[in-house]
Image (cartoon, rainbow, N blue to C red; front, side, top):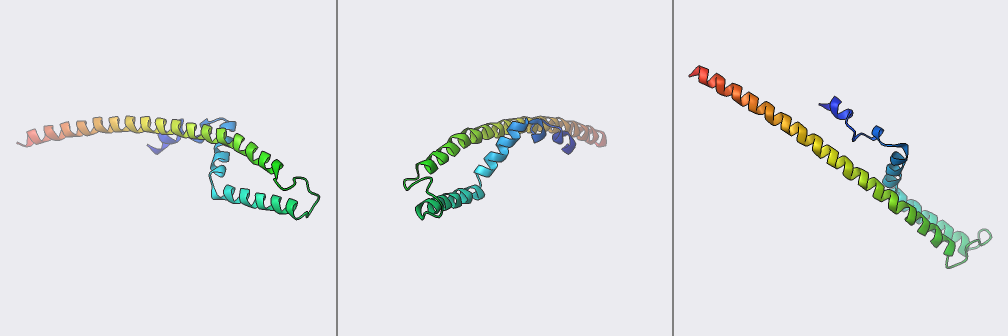
Length: 124
């Protein structure tokens, strides 16, 4: 059964390159690593501009930083939604696959039951 499942279309090798990249980005964006990265990046950005470590390129209200974060949000939201849609599609395919296996198992169990009934009748 495992070999036939490996060839099933829910496997990632069936998705396009862009879809795999979107899934990787969505996985990263939904991680603590991403949250930590954004926090550290924002702190470094604010400190660099507030304490004039280098020439100020984004003074205090940090409008450019807000723009950058808004762009990241605007880009990441659809990517995450696309990844979730693919995950839902994978779940539907997996459920259909499980249903087919259950139907096949049920038929096999019914055959075994019939065989056992025949054996029982012969033993009487």
